[in-house]
Image (cartoon, rainbow, N blue to C red; front, side, top):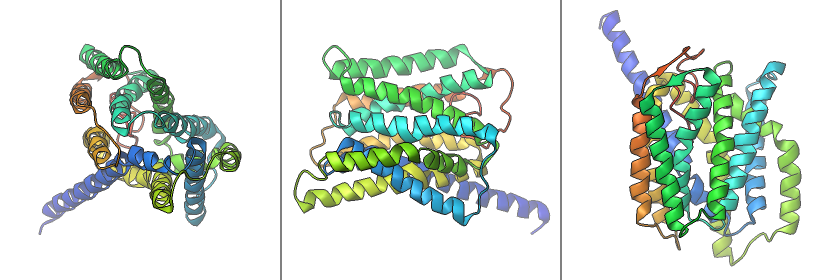
Length: 325
């Protein structure tokens, strides 16, 4: 085999590896809501979310120590704090509270807007100017989700919907800032340091919640799945999923990896059907497909303005209309 053919073959192998890793990340994230719903059957909302963050931080700390990762520069801590506030604290807390009264299917549809919300924030941070097609598609996707929420709550968004919308906002800022910072350090280190930075909040939160909230609400047969759901959301959703996702994106680039994530809300709908006592509204898959179509349009819409500083290394800042979940 000549050098040129060898290079082509190596490139194809790298693409397959990167695609597989990115797909594993999306698969891990798609189980987050069902796992959280299981955890809530045995733990209180704040016990579940606090324990999730603390356990993930312990794993992150072990990885940082084992790899002898140096402490980030002072200029990085502001962005890490935004990631901690949006992705470690804000999104898990708000979505967990919403899942107390909202189904996983409903929540999956509403949070399907996260790619669009992050795209809007990212365009402001990067100075890129999305085309009219991008804004029309983003508006259509938002309108579809709002209409779904109003239809499901018979006229007005429910309290759970408001929590989910707030989660979209804070997580969009966390993703956008994390995406910018991932151009200067490996992406897994961004989420790892964010988890560690949040410990002064998550440790007291967990201690108080475990002392005041009921640990379980049923038999051991109920508690076992709750513990499994908590472990999944902590180790896979909150940390390990990021490892595969960021590594895959580093290999194949943002544009290609982002196409895989478009299936995440639909995957979550499929998993929610498997949960006992879970009912999927007929409008949920229709709305999810509509939002997916809008995201596809935003993916293809061209933008103007300065290019990203580190293309191909971040899940947000490539061409504006994109994110991770």
